[in-house]
Image 1: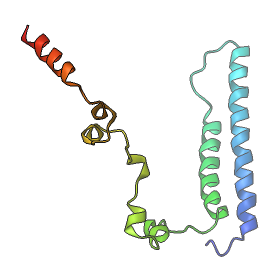
Image 2: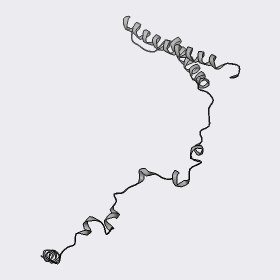
Image 3: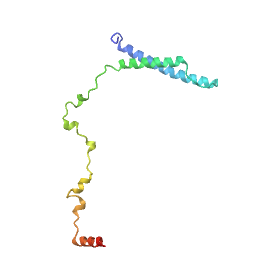
Length: 129
């Protein structure tokens, strides 16, 4: 059936259904305004506005799918098919450079300060008390 209707026809129907949806919104607002004028409570919209809204929405969705063009499959391997596993599996957001294992390194700042023999003897004396 899609080959019988041209692309410009789908565009026209899509535009007309969009205008119809805008008319539904205006009609609903006008109905609420009328109810306020006659001081009645709002219970629900009239059935003609509800039906026009549903039909316009369905027609808009249907014709918009034809206006958008042909659907293409979503393939995850298409873009990453030419990349190596090292490139694909690389997650730089998980890199961490500040971790507790660096304290075991001999170049760590706390280990570069050598305690003198006086400091060690003072520490031993204070721990015996």
